[in-house]
Image 1 (cartoon, rainbow, N blue to C red):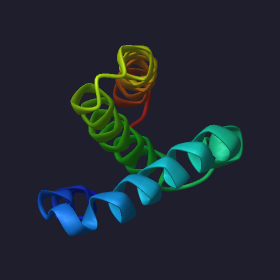
Image 2: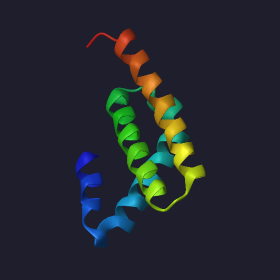
Image 3: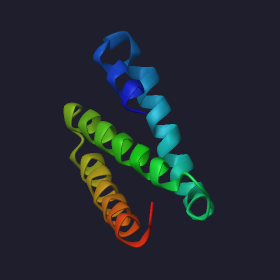
Length: 91
């Protein structure tokens, strides 16, 4: 996911990167309960955290404070969930 977000450094790729991130964000929200019970959830939540950070920054650059706060809240929520995973799972 980091590589995809890094592609946004090229202005011509910004719309595609943002669309991909928004799509992943919505998929994570929609399928999170199912994915939570499957292998690889930790990596999916890390991807969601990266996507939230990217979309928050995009909203900040566009001056959209409401959307920026929304992604901050989601990032905090997913970060807390990640911490619970780290504390409760044995790797």
